[in-house]
Length: 79
Image (cartoon, rainbow, N blue to C red):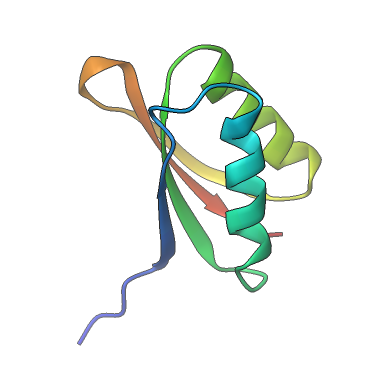
């Protein structure tokens, strides 16, 4: 059996800044170092802030994949 590499999932597509990163930060704090959080976020300011703030906090953005409708799927590894 293959283990799911994603430890938690977060959909913040209906949220706006600064709540997008606040929710992401809280979710990351619940993970252990090295675990991966999947985040769905709208493109634009919310996406930019989540990526920038995650990197500033020492986390690693593993991927940023654009989905339909301007939604991005981020995989962030807790640093």
